[in-house]
Length: 106
Length: 122
Image (cartoon, rainbow over all chains, first blue to last red; front, side):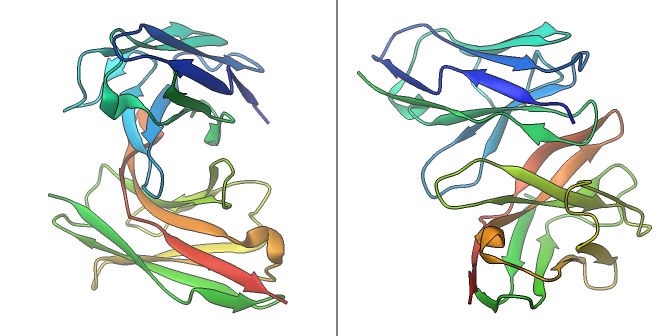
């Protein structure tokens, strides 16, 4: 099984901050990685697919990068609506998610 | 706009079978592009992919659950279903039905239902 390890597990930030979340795969997953945002009581929403492709309708302040085993999600200027939990997920083999990163208000 | 809606019992007894249905509206389940699937999330915990089904009935499932999981599709009603047998308290979770982008992006989920909480009681 391919394990996805996210860091940090919790991140405190302020509006306007640049935020970076990292995900490491236990073996290469090429660029088959997606990132999701989840708010309390809601279903996750896809932000990025194939490591760096912005899903339609997602603000351009979100970006993804990486290949192989190291991936990052960056939010260039954190907005009030961005306080949420973020999940990475690989789909090189059967889909598997990271443990999540909660972004809360500093 | 595509919408997915889960339905089924919110309480299941241990050792019995959990059964959920997802109704797809605003699009056809017989699209040749997409898979349709299930993901679950225990309260306060992470996401676990359960499996997916193509409109032809072909499935792919999480190896850790495959012996207990059946996923089927009914194109006449634009629905797909999940059955999870021999449930325990560890199966208590919010269950989401999803659309899988399919093709080269199979395994990436672009539409989700609102989720339904299923509690396993002893």
